[in-house]
Image 1 (cartoon, rainbow, N blue to C red):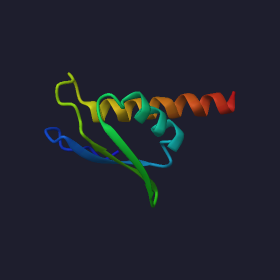
Image 2: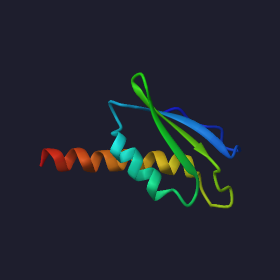
Image 3: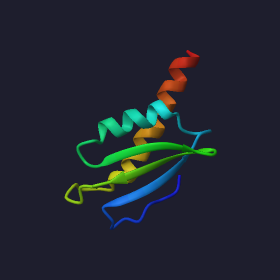
Length: 83
């Protein structure tokens, strides 16, 4: 994951395809839709997520929490597939 600048109302993060599933990223984006807008696109070995309109009134780091949620979603999906 590439970290965004923390004081901007937009950021881009690169999430490696070996670690993140697109569906998990999309689910995380839907969960965090009240706090920012998310656009996901493939780029080489990564999914690039452009985050805009980040609500700076929300306590905490919206982008970092989104990334954590996407990774957790991926883990759950992979575990479910292999169960």
